[in-house]
Image 1 (cartoon, rainbow, N blue to C red):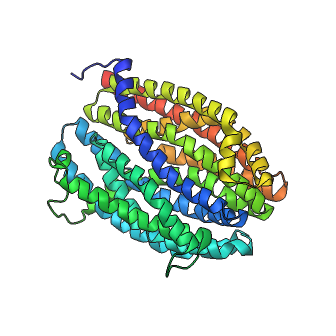
Image 2: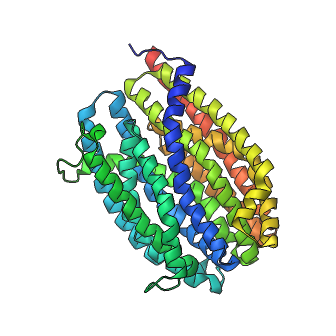
Length: 451
């Protein structure tokens, strides 16, 4: 009989798992923050070029990463079911898929600059944005493989090595950015586009470090991931893709609304794009709080799902949502009190800063609903329910928020606030539908148990 747990116990377990994941998430988001800040100190044009490049790269990268995130609930389920012999097989097959998907993403990003003219991106931004996309694409196989190993490490309860690597990467990126942005020795001066080369190189260094650590550390010797070879099994590939593609699409639908906003705003000029990028960057850092909680919820819910301990699973969901609410209140306070000082870190341009401060008011408005929707999605992933969240995010973001954004910006000339109002509407709809789906899933499992 599954053992009962208290909410206090589960809060401790959830926070203990979440903290290193949070540091990892902040560190990885910090990589983009460093790029944004360094580009912002070059010029508004360089910052705008980075915004456009990231606006295309980020949704593509997160789509492929999202597919690999299916590794987490699969490993967590095996841990909960105490089927440790299955874990090495899951991870090796996940790495096969990661390598293949990373190569596909690399090729795809080489063709993305062709879309810049289609999106009416200003001509002066296209060369740097194009070079950024070409360069950063070569890091995609490393990104997907690293994600596979990260999911494995976190799902078995060892998030700390990934955290350490992410913190070291923050330090390493600064000199790499400097080398490629300003040019040293034989390296040419590439400006903001140099961030793409620096980030790609860093991703390969991070992957190599994690591979070596997992191969050598005692904590991983039970599974011996690299001690045997396996061919790609089509049956597992289909299972991973069936679970992972909806995750990737759900992430893509949400993130694309935020990141492609820079492209929708591009006709309004460098100042608006730069200010929007600052506001997005600030909220992206704060989003790491509920996002880290959602990853921890996926692991804890997935473990109880493997145990078939529905009571414990519902308790951890409740604790997660209450924690998400508390965190959202904290982030709202941080933005309200510190927006002026934080904005000054990004830019010296008073016009850019003024618009950024205006947009941050909208960021405050959606913190709670954003925290709820990402937490609900994390719980659903732990229950291996990924199809419904995919359709929910498609409807909320692409069928509602995106058309509203384009209409208000391009046809009603509403200004940058049109993007943010659309985001709030889309997030609200997604939040309501995801919470309802989670409630219905819990009810279904309880009914099955009683019958």
